[in-house]
Length: 118
Image (cartoon, rainbow, N blue to C red; front, top):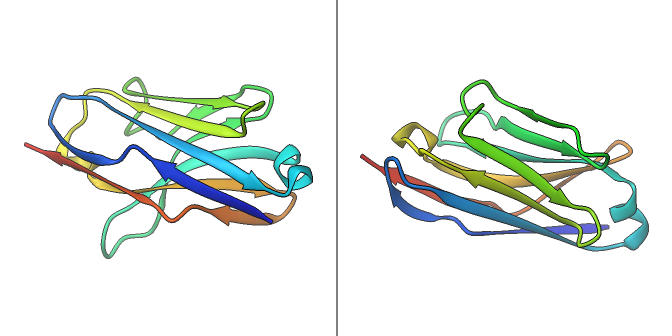
């Protein structure tokens, strides 16, 4: 099994930046097979939304709403995922979750709150 733990959430003002980190631990084999790691976010009453994805070979994709402002990166050796968020807006306020996909098994972190004040 794999445990994912997010760090770095907090309260910022609009226009500011924040960097989230996600550390994976647990089964070495599962971590090595974790081809895709992603960031999702969720607000109360809404479905979880895919924000950004990084594959083990460095391919990244973004939601249209964050393209150009957010940067996802991954340290495969350290089993870590990062999300650098710039020019934050109140619409980015959400709980951000780290996600890892191993074969057909989904692993989730507990979430970290990001709040952007106007």
